[in-house]
Image (cartoon, rainbow, N blue to C red; front, side, top):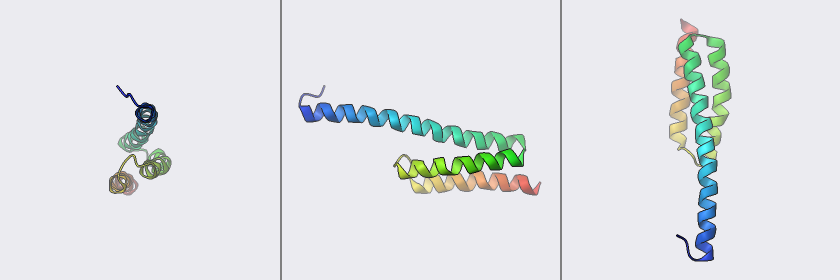
Length: 89
């Protein structure tokens, strides 16, 4: 347990940050799953709309340091390729 005032404050801050990060991580995963579900259903319009909603959430996760920028780019690229496959078929 933290004994000094600085360590107690750091423990409080860490808990606040942990909760915020967990919330944002959950929001990120939900957005990605929504796009995946829409692409699996085969509906191009809903998949495209879900993708447009998910992109800012993914980018915000990078800005807040939640995920690496390359991971965000990989997610966006893969989701977009699934949507493009829907448009051609």
